[in-house]
Length: 396
Image (cartoon, rainbow, N blue to C red; front, side, top):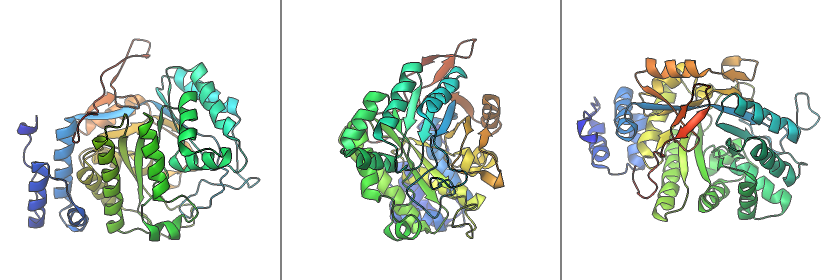
């Protein structure tokens, strides 16, 4: 299929050598990343990213049937970019009982979901058993439901609460039913940005330690980048290259798991302490998604998370390097796009598939590990084809 792809056209001559490196399979470097962010030829950048996306995935665009569960918004941290957290006793603060989380997951499974995505604040007083009970309870009621849960920041918090090592925490969570880790908490891997926006949150060394340990234990994970606040494009480039290097080490070391997907997250300033910032533009979103695809070819999937970018922009992003729109979601407490006062942010499967088709791609339902889902007449998943992940090679 690679031989039939047209060579992507660029109007900026400075992108020609970069394009030649891309076609030759030579990894792009930091200077290339800076050039991609600086060039006025946005459409050329998009065409380069689309070329690589087509090489990896053809005309397929993925989605899944999932349900987000945010078990508490009570958090020991007070990150400036976050409009989600509350202090205990503050108006709007909540804590879900274990049974409520399990019942929510069970309803999602009965409605056809193949995944629950569970994250929350760093609650100062919840015991480690709370999280184990959630996992084991969901596993007992819904044995086929994949549980993607707990960011690296939460894992470090659990290790402190339980006075266990990160490896011990992850092992116990895995044994209780944890299927994979989400990528949240990465934000931007830069000391200046960290100290200005989320001081008190664990730094990049701990984030990578959690994910490396998870991969060693056979637990797949995702990676994120929160952009459009106080960072510059140089920090975005360095962040992406650090993720690429970590993925390459996992590949070279032949670990049993690695990063599934990279999700660049568009910062939404409303309701946060950074509400005075403008946030990224739509064109900036497209450029950042495209650059992520080009700089990190060894993480096979790039997600345009429609909750953050908006559905219409995410649709366009399928032609700017992205191959995944996420899923049906249903409830999402972390952010509310365009001033919506509700966390009921849901898409029906028909809407997602139409969005993908209208963009010129083939909608394909996947599970969390990017295995294709097919369904019987009663809408139950009946088959998962082999994963598209090529675990034994350094390149996709």
